[in-house]
Length: 82
Image (cartoon, rainbow, N blue to C red; front, side):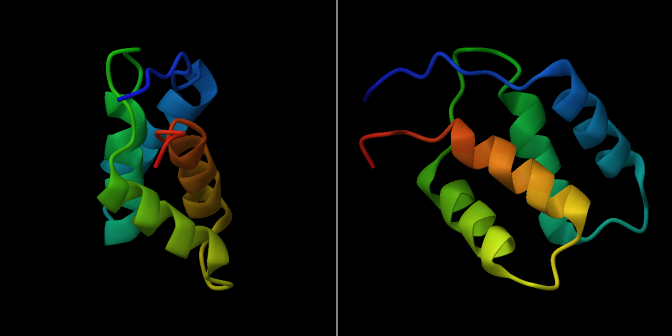
């Protein structure tokens, strides 16, 4: 598996933390937030299932700006060989 030198920025980590604490946040947003937070460490990278979820969130016109931002961050840390 290729390594990924990208990690979640402080701004996205803060957004992800706020999303996880928001009881009104969607399940998708919360999943993306959890993935983004787990990638604050260089050792972690987006899995195939989360890549698919993030991709679908970006293509969905009804996704919120927060969901789209989290999805973009998660996808940017995906395995480039997949």
